[in-house]
Amino acid sequence: MAGKLKKNNKGFSLVEMIIAIVILGIVGIPLLHAFVTSANLHTNSKKYGEATQAAQNINEIVQAFPVSYFGKSGADADQGLIDMLGINRDNLQLIQNEKDLLVNNVDTKVVGLKNIVSGDGAYDCRLTLDRGDASSSSSDGFVEINNERVAEYAQMDGVFTQSYLEGVDPDKKAIVDTNQYIAANSATLNKATIYDVKRRVAVLIHESDTEFEADGTTPLVECEVYFNYAVKIRYYPSGNVARYTMYYPGSAFDNDSPLDFYNDYAVNENVNNSTYKNPYKDDPGVMARGYSYDIFPGGVSQPAADEFLNVYLLYYPFYPYRSSGTYTSEYDSFFILNPDHIRTKAFIIKQCPLGEDYTPLSRTEDGRQTLMSKELKYNCWIRCQTAFSAEGMDWVYTNAATNLGGTGSIKSAKFEAYYNSGADGHNFAVDEGLGNLIGTTRRTRIYNVKIEVFRAGAMSGTGASTVFSGEPIYTFEGSKTKS
Image (cartoon, rainbow, N blue to C red; front, top):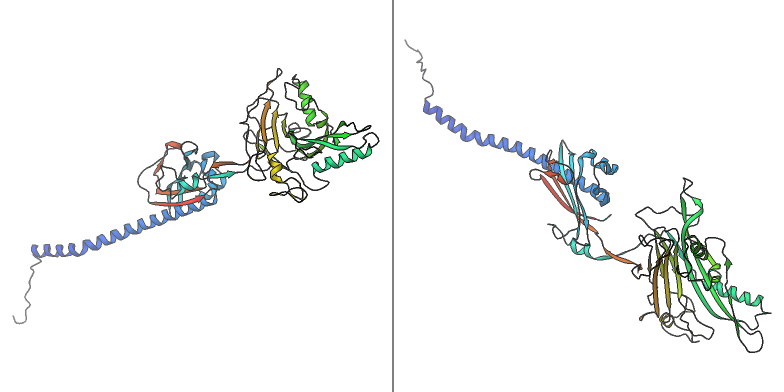
């Protein structure tokens, strides 16, 4: 029949199907791989970004808080730090907290932080702070910086500074008061002049008899400084035969004076003056009168068991001399007295005297002694005395043996420490009990900061047994100055 279509029901052959599949595989598999790779890269990139942000957030917190805050965990952890990190207390684990600068040169803190939230994810982190010791992989020169010794100053809890002004300086007041005494007794003290002057300075630290803590029973601590003088007056009652008498300028002391300290312990502890090293046995008047100054007006709280009260006495050196102009061998004496055994450090600081009486480098036109020549004749004697055992003995730091006038040594320096151990008395003298005015120490001043961010669940265990599984997603390294 004309116009009839011819039907062909024949399909694709096997060969054609194989060829088509091969072509589709060649084209499709790379496209599929690209899609999968892109998805993985997106996921990993997101995790890396979140891990990076987590490390940056932790570093900001590290910079904001003192290093000591990272040395505690669990219930002892600082609440502010916990709030900033946004974790539970149990999720902060102190893994290592080692500080041994003297022997092993180590100052390292390692902290585990669990479940640090960043973006849509949560991560476990390991924070390491170290001073750049020998085992550190990234010291960045911190070893040299941290090993340099630095000056160590003690906080000033109480300070007395001797004034050099007329009418205020106790040294000058002693001379003025003595001259007034001579003038008032001119009838008996004929042609009297000051022949010799001795000075003794005492720092008395003790529990108050009248001031207490809020509980009404714990006494506060009081501290006074006493400047005492013994003035030898030469006079001529008749003819040219000289006579001498002693005068002790200043006001009489009522209670808690240095003399009371010695007298009380000579009786109450059954220790006689000679055994207990009473330096005023032959001349008690020198501690019965003088000039007193309060360092802790109204009293202060007792120091904690691991703390000290730091008391500073800044003084001008006293150069004993006679009216003939010759210097004597008398000591410029200082006594740190602590009958109640309060944990105290005393800083006895010699100041360079100012004013027209002293010219540092040369004699003045009228022949006055220079500061250097006076310092070469200077004798100092510092004693620390307490009523109990040597354990926790007070420490005295001083520059008294330093020549303020320049080169050369002062004439002599004597340092002693005594204590009474009980009814039968005991005393000792040690040089080790007195140190330098300013100590130097090796101290960590800059830390390496290393923050490793792991997947959630990588951290397990507690305390020193804490471990991390797998490799960190991101590692941040930086530094932090000591705060």
